[in-house]
Length: 227
Image (tube, rainbow, N blue to C red; front, side, top):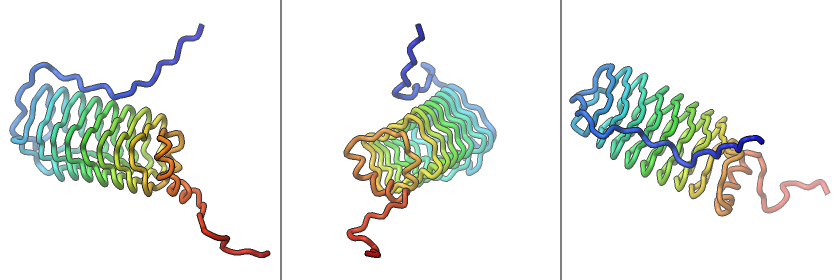
């Protein structure tokens, strides 16, 4: 008798955090590996920092606005009430990472790999996820207006109760994506969301974007007639 197919999990795995933490270094300005640390707003961060790895840590009220962290790897870490606006993390690797109450406007995650990532109550307008690869990504109650998902791959994920107005899904590949409760106005390349789940009331808002992508014009009368 064939075994039953496992159901996909509904939420990302939470960060696996230690019971106690060490205090984080006072500065982050060179290649570094943090493990099991608690960082706060007192940590000073240089404008450009290469090869940063953070594991099993918590960072509260970080000021990372406009910083550029290259080769960034993060695992089992929680960010709370941090300013991450304009932070550049292109090509980053995030596994079991959560963001709560953070400011993420304009964050750059182009080419990033996101596994078991949760973002809650964190505005991320104009975020750049070009060619990102995400699985078990959950974003809730966050503004994602004009976010760019160009050629991103998103599987077993959910964008719930988010504002996706003007978001660009050109070339995006989705599998088992839940969009319930989200605003779906003026989407670009809405046809790329084939297979996603929405509620009946969302269908009305999504229809104009689908018609535009399909090249279908809705007119009051025929534009011409040979009769």
